[in-house]
Image (cartoon, rainbow, N blue to C red; front, side, top):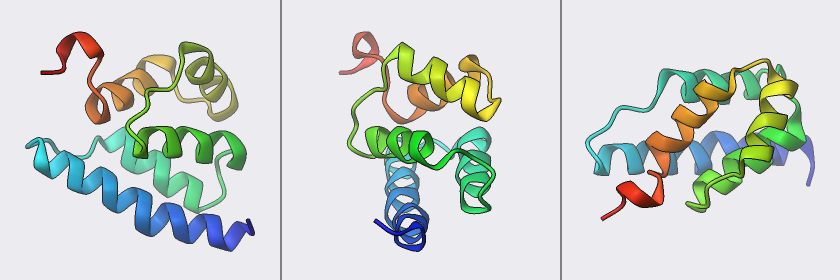
Length: 97
């Protein structure tokens, strides 16, 4: 998939899914997540890891701790902030209804 196609996919489809899901749950999109997506769109994030992370979240599959740790190293975003993104988009199984 070409870079421009990935950028359009994330900008339109994935971001919209996050916003809709957050609205449905009565949550605001995390500022960290919004910054993460905007930084990706400005080519400030490693593409492969960012795309994998956003696709997992969009599919409502929670990234593993290893994936979160790797993304944290690649992006400079703390694991705590990335976990917060995951918790806002996909609550841990113990908190799901």
